[in-house]
Image 1 (cartoon, rainbow, N blue to C red):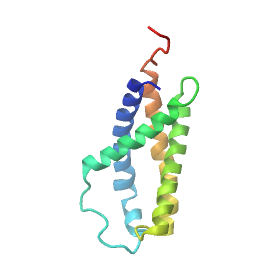
Image 2 (cartoon, rainbow, N blue to C red):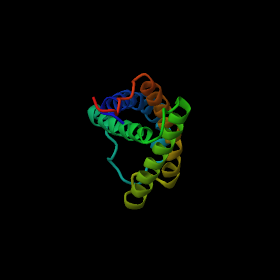
Image 3 (tube, rainbow, N blue to C red):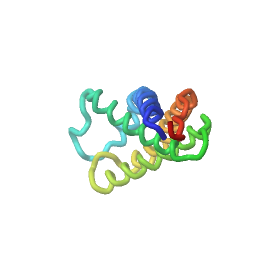
Image 4 (cartoon, one colour):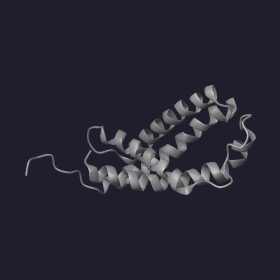
Length: 144
């Protein structure tokens, strides 16, 4: 994948993942996450540090974009959704279970549900990234 496509996928995907994450995790499922916190106290911030969360979502989008770039041929929007869902669920399955095993920030229910919600979060992000990449022509690999 050329750098232009990586940047476009990362920026577009990062914005979509940030906005969708806010809707899913801060609005729709906020009560669920609060009710299924672990025994640790004082770990949630009163308000998020937006630049840090956005930076994390840019990294998430870059990972999804990179996974798409390692496939032969153009990635359809449906394939993008599948790639995003797989990357997202595996990323958060890994993170959530490591945190569950080493810290008291979430109970087991939250640890199991979070990667499942990431199927939707990452899937929509992947679909949008694939749609954006379809508009950016791939760089020619032939010598000039």
